Length: 206
Image (cartoon, rainbow, N blue to C red; front, side, top):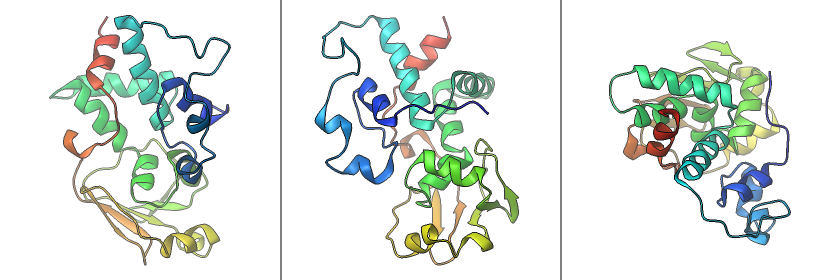
């Protein structure tokens, strides 16, 4: 499966804001954006006025990078969101939030979405009691995500048991059991990812 393998910090610098792609490093003084708060490349420090198209493109790129998706995956997700009743932009963000890798991250069972995707790929989780290894699976209200029994003894998950986890209102987590439940699908006000979804809709509607 194709995926981005370049430096994660470069993506944050390109978008001009922290996207917390590297977990704990993003909160430390080692964060590249703290030291070089400008876009990468030879002309990264040049100030350029962006066109409307440029603003729309950057917003789409930012959303893709927040959720760790490639263009074809993101476009497919948008097309599905457009077919659902309601506002396309909100449907898109809700669909992105309901991806299994994002839910694992929101539950605090991974330090970043990238790590969550890797853990899911390696088969460390079950969904409603069944082993899963597809990060893009869309969870539904009432679904239960749990760390697989054989994986609970790993240092990674032992460390999580000792942490205080903060979760969004649409998810509940039992840290001792290393499992979480999706109480309901998130609504727009529950999603704190800084994305102006209307710009993405405008871009794809051209």
